[in-house]
Length: 66
Image (cartoon, rainbow, N blue to C red; front, side, top):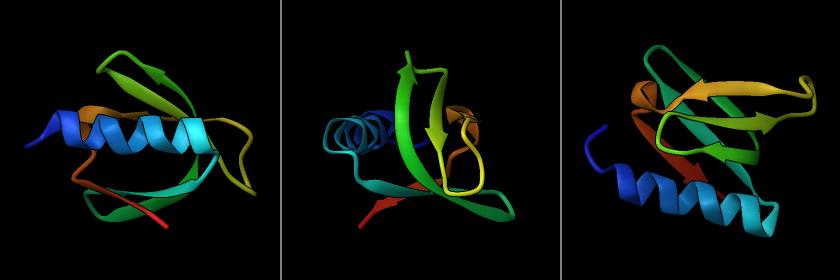
């Protein structure tokens, strides 16, 4: 990731405010709400479809929060 701290800031805000975030990964997007940030390694999220999603942060190209 180019700017890890900026991405972590958005993820922490999603966790704190329970707001949805969209993760942009190579070839796909994943929408959910952050439930846990695991150091700078990974993030756990949930969506309407899945109760637990684990995303490696080194694969995240961008994040967007609505």
